[in-house]
Image 1: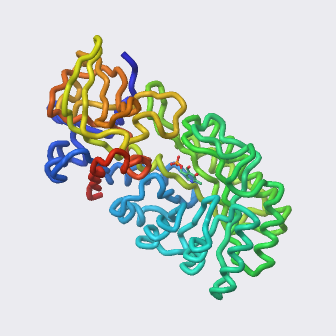
Image 2: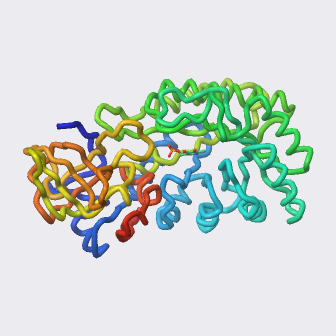
Image 3: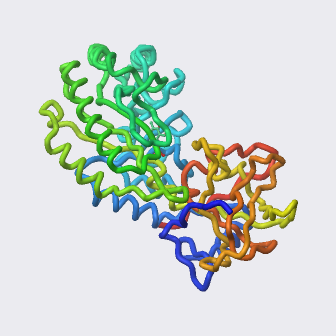
Amino acid sequence: MKPMGALPPEFVQQDGLLKIGGRLADDWVAKAGDTPLFVYDMAIVAARIARFKAAMPAIDLHYAIKANPHADLLTAIAPLVDGLDVASSGELAKALAVKPAASISFAGPGKRDDELSAAISAGATLNVESEGEAARAFAIGDRLGVPPRMAVRVNPDIELRGSGMRMGGRASPFGVDAVRAAALVNAIVGAGADWRGFHIYAGSQALDPGAIIETQAATIALAARLAGEAGAAPPLVNLGGGFGVPYFAGDVALDIERVGSALGEALASRPPILAKTRFAIELGRWLVAEAGVYLTRVIDIKHSQGETFVIVDGGLNHQLAASGNFGTVVRRNYPLAVAARMGQDATETVSVVGPLCTPLDRLGDKVALPPVEIGDLIAIFMAGAYGASASPSAFLGHPAAIEIVTAP
Ligand SMILES: Cc1ncc(COP(=O)(O)O)c(C=O)c1O
């Protein structure tokens, strides 16, 4: 038997039946008309945002829509956050449908001219990642007669300790090296563009509050140093994010209240050049991961050489992350359960596998579950971020997953 992550505490059960957003899992399947499906509980998202706001000092909260760009989710989340961060012109179009351009920022190391043009003409902020990109943006701005809004994305000389994905403290395709950032600010200001400040993103999926506190303090110091070098105070410093969520056995949920009080202290004593600066944190998974459940139906149960395989109708084509093939080095089990036998004692060890012809298609590896029967729904938790949109849905030609967003 191998361990699995803890079920998110937000999910309730009634008489052993899983409820999501106040309705039984079976009801959601009936509403969708089929399996597999994702259900995103917006009440959980709203509660996370409220918790963030209560814990943090007066800073802006941006949602990084790459975590889950479902249109209904964006419509529901947009009024609850201060900004949306996008990473392509496709995401930009989705963001513009729900939020004014002035609150949208666009990061990404390879923005094409048509993407720069779409962002500049809409009035979104480009998080500029290189001198070459800045030059292309100036030229496009001139052609359009619109001064581009530009923040400088800095490849920081700090890393987010313990993060699942480090994006600082090393050679990187993201942002410009800190040593060149001030010169780029001067070029932006000199070109008559609207300089919005700095975007400094050091990593993702960190659960250690100490590491986040340390990185935020270093990020504020770096922003002040770069502002001093450039001789200009940044209107906004985006401090990045990296707030992680507990996917696996032994993971402990991030203590954001601790992070918030340390950030409050760090901002209270910030260097004078940042006195009038606004600060933002951009989060993806911390806002939405726990709100999502992926429901997939058991098609068959097979026994082979002493092992039991529960074969379900959904797999890595929808939920790549749970198969261990997105964002993790070592495969570990996401939390999962039999939706009709919640809270029951485990009686058997089984592997939950999808319908794809690849041994990678494994959603649960030797997990302990209560008795499982053909026709049961298996619920895979922590499925609200990097699920449907981060999975190879065309692989092997199965239908796309259905996605439902509950009313907030
Ligand atoms: C620039 C940037 N912002 C935000 C995110 C969102 O990260 P997470 O979902 O871990 O909060 C990422 C993740 O790669 C990122 O690269």
